[in-house]
Each structure stands twice: as C-alpha cells, then as structure tokens.
Image (cartoon, rainbow, N blue to C red):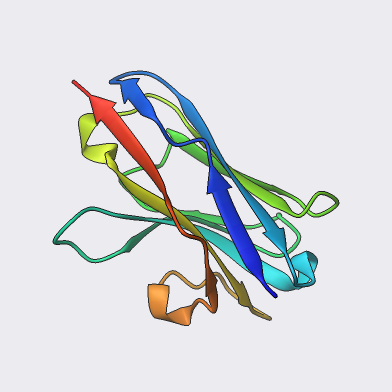
Length: 125
C-alpha cells in the first residue's frame, strides 16, 4: 500500500520560513519523481517544485524561485520543501506527489500517480 504523508504545515507570519516533509512508503522511492503542489479553494492545483529521481534536477514555479528549495533523501524515503521569505499569497494546502518517470520533470498534476492528503500552510500578513 502506497502512502505519502505530509507534515510541517502551520500558521506563520509573512517573511518567515517553514519546512514541509513528505514521508513515502510502499514503493521504490528512488524510482519516482517527486513533486510538491499547492492548491487554494476555487483554483486549480499548481506545481511548486519538482525533483528528479536522483535529486540532480529540479523545477520551480516562477512564483517560488529563489525562496523555495526541494530536496530528497532516497535513503530515508523523504522529500522536503524548504520555504523561505513566505508571503500571504503562499497560503494553500500543499501536497506531495509521486510518479514513476524516466526522463524530464512533469509539472501537470494529472501526470502524477500517488498523492498525499495535504498539509495546510497559512501565511499571515
């Protein structure tokens, strides 16, 4: 049974930092590209960051470049999202997702096979 469990979301003031973590089980973690997506009510889920299977390649949405860093530990089966200089517009439910992929970094939610339940990040102004 595949499980993706996010943690770390909470209320934080603008300008602050948060680190989200996603613990993955039930699959061969190193075979999967991992992504962090976010969603606000009434809007489509959008990618924040994606990391390749080995961690050498990453993708960041323009809105988070320079502020967010995605990383993974294939020995621990975890993928993290370090978020700095948070803004109120970063408020969203953050989801981690997994997809087996050979080349490239998929950024469309429909490309992903497995999803976590989400963790709420709220940034106050």
